[in-house]
Image (cartoon, rainbow, N blue to C red; front, side, top):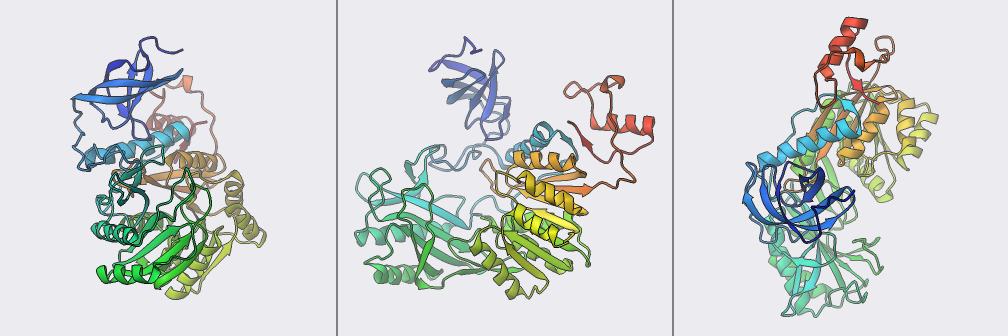
Length: 502
């Protein structure tokens, strides 16, 4: 039922209690949750109600009356206007606290799991960490070409040529590119009319080699100003080693088309990640935080605990970086990825680093796992690095059928990671530890690494508990993990290594 005290456009004073997983502050009015973006826990704010639903409402801040202890002053002039930094109004310490809680809440509420949530690993860099940026274009009131980012939930471009999350050299290159396009008389693509030439400017930075790729995403395969543009750009910025034209004439929200043509320099950008030499095309997937990715993959390797005789299966392997970073520690690496270009990159990366024990399949994760199972492959360790939607049940079922000793899940979505870990927990794999890793400072996103180990059926049994028998005091869940462990040990003589609540 709609709370009668909450009406659209009404003003209300709110005390922010916590953050939701999308970074919005949460308050309550008469038992109804009110979500308020750009607020911090402990804030007392005057807010305006902008939408009222049956079970919750949304509001915007009009004034912060009392700031919470974790609030900080955002330094970006377009904070709140572009769709990027949802948490730049928090101190970084507070951001880490909240991201750790996002992961812990997902594991408990969505997964029903009770296992150790390890301390979050901070990003090595809080600013300037992104090695990739894609900028839509617009024209300002004076007719000049400007680059920026989309406003939240829209395709309206907010001009911003200098973003604190990008390396400083991106801003300088971006200004030069916009000026040269303007001098060449290039038109800017308009989504409404579907007319215009240049849709996006796409920059990639190889951190280890300090080289930059500049990619123009255009609606045509030929530009009349190619030579002059490349000569002027590379003269102004020696770090630019590659200028690429990506062709995307489709009426779509997808940024990149499938066709690329090198206008100047190298076809790919060389870099190194976790000791793996990689070559990046505009279409290659690559973690946007290079130093953070090395930390993330290092945690995955620590959890994998590979032995020299092991077979490692890397599903959703992309360009193979995770698996190849562990190839020297195992006997055999098998990777699977559905994107053909990524598989080609993975094979080339393996060749460059001399990983003769690696092979890669081009197939959907579930199909690849089923094919390998039919071949008799029994991996000792499986690494899963799925997209945000997580793993499908066919993939999880086949992985469980393979019976690996450990499953290490690397996920950019704690909710789907919790769901998939719960499925594996119900099919013989005990979650032993969860490590949040901050790869995307100032944004709402957080990576999660989950370790699941195969239960030894000779040492583990399922015990059905009547929780009413227990003398428990936890107000939130009726039973705490430690109390249940103590109860099972006393009653059944068994040690509980993990707990799955159905």
